[in-house]
Image (cartoon, rainbow, N blue to C red):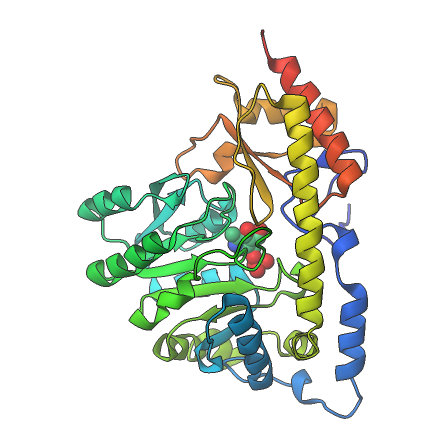
Length: 382
Ligand SMILES: Cc1ncc(COP(=O)(O)O)c(C=O)c1O
């Protein structure tokens, strides 16, 4: 049978799947993009329909640098930016340019499960680094460095996927120092940095890029729309040169020049910033709803830290509960989630699961949590 799907999500309409870590269709900025396209597509300027500048459209990089300078609270130079087709593309290209098969990559345990898929595509060996409530545990990292020489360390410093934790500034600084001492690169996946709902997070890892070890990865997927397939790398001009001279952009030109031209307008007109302000308000509200529903329905059974940003609740289940088995049982309750094992490079974390509040409105969040509570209580022998 032919598959005429247009979107990655493919769930039955009566299922509430909190496993989906992407914005709901109701949030996507169709009108904003329509305005940006109308402004840019004047029928005269054809430049962005040709192969693009290898580093990315210069005007777009300038607008992005201004946007990031505001968002990060520190100056970002357009020369330190390389435009990508999203964070996944940035990570994949980083692996292509800076690793060989069988190299070691250090990754937090838990970590973003699809980064593990990219590392597998490159034949990399993942060594898990334990985390605590402040993210990657630096002492554990130092111990691991006694036994292994990583080519790359992958970290999600702010509002981590899946566990929501944020590395304090001191740990960020130490990470950059260790990278210099032990000669490895840091791929810092900072896609949630601008999705802070209470207080501003510590400076992004990009702040430490001058040392020549940090590749800071950002994306419009979480702040505008995933379908744009648009993101960026921020690093030193020397490392930018490595990306700019890659075979990929030598052949195909800079990535996504057409989309970049439209998003340039959204940045220059402050439409992106306005949209982001609304988005933060919406997500903060969804956190309130999900938190209250979880407390009401399951406060006595589960444990979690309320997120201050990003997309996720990371739930500790009652002892002995296996989230993989729970997922099999969840189908009958028409609810879904991501089981903890998916975020482990070692098949661990069975007693954890991840819920995302990004895809559903408040009514669906309440109903989904009620279903989830019925499911969990039905497993409880007590
Ligand atoms: C930590 C993290 N990195 C990268 C991505 C994918 O980003 P992009 O759409 O820019 O490829 C996601 C999306 O869920 C994510 O959570």
